Image (tube, rainbow, N blue to C red; front, side):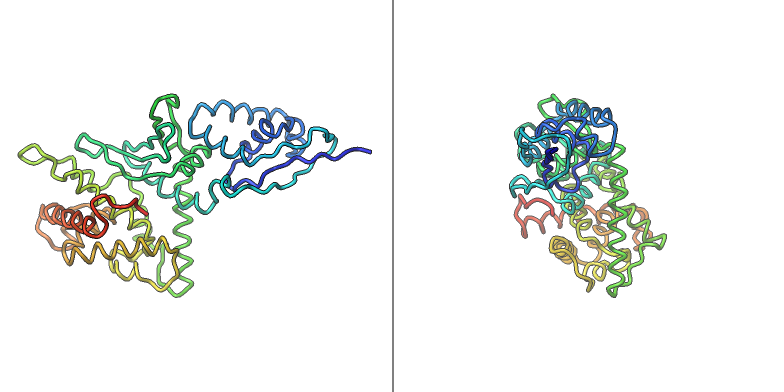
Length: 357
């Protein structure tokens, strides 16, 4: 009588690619290439290429860490069992090794990939650190930290080939967004807009299909912001028009604004777009509360400059014309707004405020 072999396949998160599953089944559980090929109904050479590709990528510290974490969920089958017939048996994963859920990865990747799409942005990873950081040039010759990425999120993003590192053996690995990462960002952005459209069915009046609404949504992921342009300008004394601290608070307001998932009519009625009756995730509501508190603290006039230039990424000339301001006055109003924002964040969260989101 032919014995039946059980190939133990841990219940990996949904985002784990099939090639990675095959690699772990072969290298950790000891399942043969031919057995995996029969199970997947593919040629053995296909599985072999996937295994070799995963092995070659282990020089990357994020990918190696991700594979090590996932390998902890694997279970080696009984070596005495026959391999004549095969089937998969789910294996439960310890909570500590469950890594990242699909919904969490989608949510975090949306913000990480947006930041990496900005000019000269990189994700820096130092070995044995608990998190990665996204930095970019601030226009004044320095660097600006725009996001902090938890280690497990950075590992999942690298495993998906959404970022790549040209020199993985460096003391500090620097990752850039890939073509696959940009494609995924477009998909995630479209999904976010679809969710916003879904809220319309609950009684809202948002319509992301309107051309002006689509343009507003596209601006949220623009690769250049008005703040960066202004930070490159210098006064008569040779100093940057916008100090690094002012750029930081403007970027913080923008990040909270993106996290708040406003409706398409935010430019006409920002408060209504952030206080709709539709139910939202607690993290989204928290971001909305922070944006509303910051803009209310600025007051009329100053809040218009901050909202349009920092959040909607509207150019200063357009803002001046829209609000009826005199030419070249917008940058002065914006700088005053950012100075007030610095005071607001220091008073409400302390000088060293908690992480965005």
